[in-house]
Amino acid sequence: MPRRRPYVAGTTPIDFVPMDIWSMIFKELQYASPAEVATVQSWMEDDAIPQQTFLPYLLASVCPLWRDTLYCQTTFWRRLVLDISSTVPSPTCLDIARIYAHQSGGQPLYIAITRNEKAHISAILVHLLPHASRWQTLRIDATDQDTLPTQLQALSGIAPLLAGLRLESDNRNAPLQLPLLFNDFQRAVPVDLPLLEILHLDGPSFLDTYLLSANARSLTSVTSLTIAGYKSSVCTAFKMIDLVAFLVQVPRLSRLKLADIEFHEDQPFEMAQSRRIAGGLRLQSLILDSIGQMALATLFTAIHDYRCIWLTFIRCYPHVHLNISSTEHLRIEHAPPRMFFGAPLATAANFDGINSRDLTFSHCNIRHEIEAMSMPMYGNTWSCSHVTKLRLHNCVCDHRSIFRVLWARRVAHTQTAFAEHDSPSFVVASIKWLSVLMIGEELSDKEKEWLNANVEYVEWNVWVGGYGSHAR
Image (cartoon, rainbow, N blue to C red; front, top):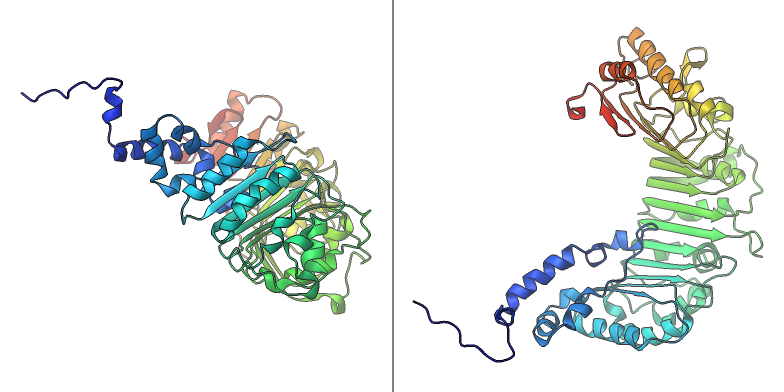
């Protein structure tokens, strides 16, 4: 019979758990925290602000054994999130910044600072800037354009691993002091961030740092670009035609978002061929949020070769002919009433020629648009003729109109013997996938029966149906 471990005063059985077991437990806790396992992409997203957890710091303060275990594992200290709101520098925040920078060893660092004051950032960066060679991401959501301290002026050239940079201010009428950050931009010297993939800047800062200096060479590795916020009160004109000419020089760009920008456009809706921009813009995703009609017209008529798979309009939509035939997924959110094809989308905006098979409306009044989809607009041409997936989320719409769309399009598709999209006899496709949330009344049993017989998959609020096997 094995002898029992002799009792030692002041100890408990948990004190005899080996460090490698504690390390495994702490890693499981880390994996359960979204902020601790965030990727470069998620660290930069608008709706995924990193959460301040201080998980390893808090665990290390429990007892010497836990502290020794965590200090031996540099991977626990890679992600630092500081949420600062007071005007007096917090010793705790400064200590945490110092500990994370030291204990992370040679690991790449993810850094996010939100709701901050300039004095705080200056003190914190004293501890973090010596480790800039290990920065993987840097995100600072500032309170005003003067918040960024002068310590960042040397960032260009000393942050070779930086893959994500997001600098944002509530004040969008002036740049975020980026001449201090990229101190050579006025001489058109490329910003030396060779691995930068994700860039998020306010409009004035992007204009000053890149556009006016034609500094596209500094973005050769950028795949995702967000420009958010520009007011017409700023003296320097920000023109869409200049931005498009710049963007076609960014070779790897695949995701682009333009939000809340008041462009200074003097171009007519229909641009002459001689004034169009040579080159192409091939995007995986394009999001346009609160962009003016003239600027949208310029964007879609200025480029000879345009491709975009996911296209999203938020609080805007152009009243002109669109070159978006390559779009496979079209999403329209928070659009003003009658902004799209009830008038003018079906007649002027080439909506009936879109190859998109996936259409989403969210938070829109779509009474007229749904009616337009339920019948040929002119001749035998249908609006959104290729659409097979339809999502209607939190929209103003009569649910009986939705059934008219489903029924009319299925009848027309049946008359062509269910011709495929590339068939010469193709006229319109049936809706095969339908998602409806928070619209009108609940379905009757008869309506559910019809949907089960004629639509492959249906989500209608909490009810799920359809004839496909995955709907059962």
